[in-house]
Length: 549
Image (cartoon, rainbow, N blue to C red; front, top):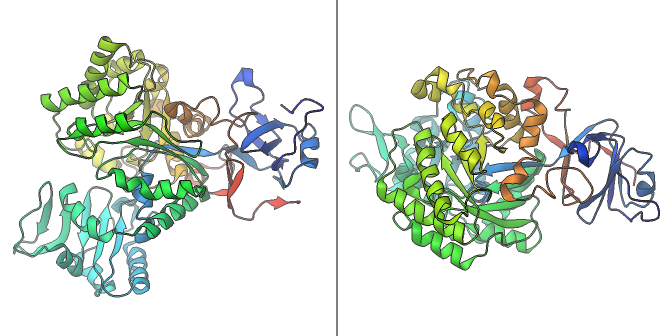
């Protein structure tokens, strides 16, 4: 769709000679074109090289694609980027580590760089299933590589390991009591092993290990988004989450105000005061207007934890939602509906989903302000057909994440093989016409790589080959990429200008290192981006593509 003759604008960037997937609907134009022209942060034209020749003559820069595939920029529709960004440069990242020895070497190097007495930490984003040894490091191993530094290594939300110096800084000795909502492991003689469990225990080392001043936190946001752009991400939808307070948003807002965000951020705001959730949400929705912000950073809604008493964690432990918590959830849903706020709620178990739907349906019956308002469920791994029907009637969507890539065995052990192979029930979601957004639930609960999540959507695979999702609940490659682009935009009310490469849409795109429609399944999981463009601006460039001016 080139611009009409006589109205050719001066453009900022033209990519030509490629295979550009537009993700257009049939009535919108071609599904694949050779060239794209960008100006002012928007796509101004797509078409053949010949059709866009006049644009190429008037552009500041032309990039020759030489037959390479281009897709819309990837948008992780559920991730905890705010929490990850403030501590990004304070932590060692183990996403690509495949043995304990390699991981320990990274810790040793970080300790040497920081100097004695400084914390060294690995906080989530890895699991024992990715390591050759199939286990976490021990207290003794951490002592050996960093004896002069407190060290904390956290495996997703399953386990934390401290070295001796770390235990001492936390104030834990062999005679210490377990912290509230946490547990300290001990050997047969009652001595601390260094292993800790539960959010109440995790919060103690996290509070000191991740403490950073404003400048370092802002550096962390920039560094994290640079890493995301290298993977082809141009957008994230942040889900708030446990331990996130209003002040944790200061660094990302500071970077935004300086015009330095390399990834668009959409933010869902969670309650942060256990027992005071209604007051939290009342204050938030009174002080802020829905969708406050701009095209780079915008408040998307309330969630994923509008009430801490309604959060069933990973669905691996027994969970009961009390009548009091449910009554308060109804009050929060009513606040959001009446004040025009979108809502997204965490629910892994079908029981939790049913109770949330009870709240939504009650408020819908009272107000008529829930159905069709873009509400969504995060996870829905165990969702029954009946509850999915209720979701469909409310016009709600489901955000699915690739957490089972790392934890297939854990779910099979608790849920059984049959239930795990239908988690989440993507086939039912698609059959019922429920919008599906793709994501990772990183950082901490998973890898942040969007391509590992796309691989999981397509293959249903897990690292250890256990709990592979059944074929009915898998996606084609086009559907999986759409869940990360075109369909992800639905969850923030932006389908009219994000997630497609068409005139008038945001100029967000990436050039994957391999064609995701042609490479092998194994190659699909490890794709990166050679070129990432966000808002018409190049945010990552590997140098693999030639520019002729």
